[in-house]
Image (cartoon, rainbow, N blue to C red; front, side, top):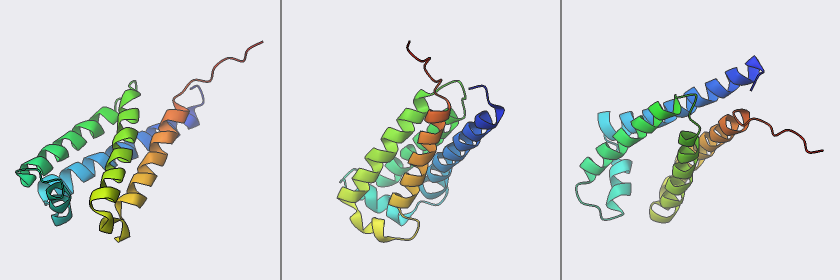
Length: 130
């Protein structure tokens, strides 16, 4: 990508996407364990839901850090796949959360749009065939 404005847009989208993962890993899973986070884990019948939440939070923070690596595109694909998988999980296991303010549907769709922006802007166009 040669246009500096497009590079800037891609970088802002990457930073924002990274901050979404860092925030959602740190705040509701590690610093102030959210009752909704615990309930979603408990819906799966997993043991030690507090530990699972903290490990998931650490993984989200790690993914957020990976997203800040400009020369790596695969974390963007990983983020998109996780956003889709987690949204489907909420829809199946805790559908009542989709009715809440700032719910997983609106958050994940916005984050998926950021994934698309980063991927699209960081993909070099292919030369035309003659």
